[in-house]
Image (cartoon, rainbow, N blue to C red; front, side, top):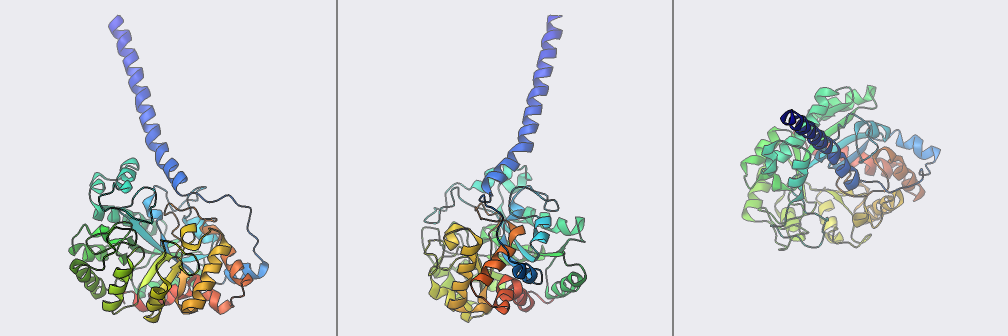
Length: 394
């Protein structure tokens, strides 16, 4: 009898432990996401009737969101994080580049990070129950995140379309003319750590839908120095080979987070225009996150785009007004044809608004005296034109 009672107690205890473990596995990932991707508390933003009317006619495009990093089902609306399809539709977003994060330090240190510094994406992958192969392979992390975005089209084609070519983009625009809430998504990398040091992985990523690649993130890597690394180096021989392969495949090159010497080297050898997918202008907001304005001018001269971010380290605040002021500064520096949006939503930043509230930026741009033509360009027209010119044809 005693043995039977003890077994019963052990059984109940085991069930309790299992329930606790399952609850933790279900609750911890949303808690991490909520804590890492907050939005500052704010009252509803003032948006004039004229701004609302203009905003609803815009093609809006954003060059950088890390939403695939998290365990949200982007088909559903959430009360945390920054991006999901229902909120994109409310914000009238047409084009979204989804970037895949594969390596990042804790604390978002913009000053200096050693390459050997512990990588917090490994812990996040384990906590979010990603496949075991992603725990050790940065390439597999990129692929896993890409599959999430691809599945959006398979599961929700009336609301989302993946764009990989100029032909796809034309089809998307035709569909959107009769379905104004259709969102077009593209795939990019947050740093070429995703190559795992293997040039062949550039073509593998391309074959799996990647159409933009940034070169560095917070660490120096095999391609060259990061803006937040320790060396400040330019491109390595491997980096030059990688750039040539990206150009061969018509992959858009993103120099966000790259050292100034890397940016200079890429400008010297690239035969295609560059993008900085999320940044600020140093002359507007002096910050270790922003490269020099002189390099911004050189990128623009070669047909490139500078995409303005929505967080304090990029624009020295996180309000729609501060974003609009950075955009206005950029137009004065490099011209309206070279400024775009690069939110860094869901990139462990704290913006003052989520993607559903982008009409507040349109309002502030009007308040600052920008013309309708300028607003159309920076809110998404420039991104659309760039993609029409630089995506692979088919």
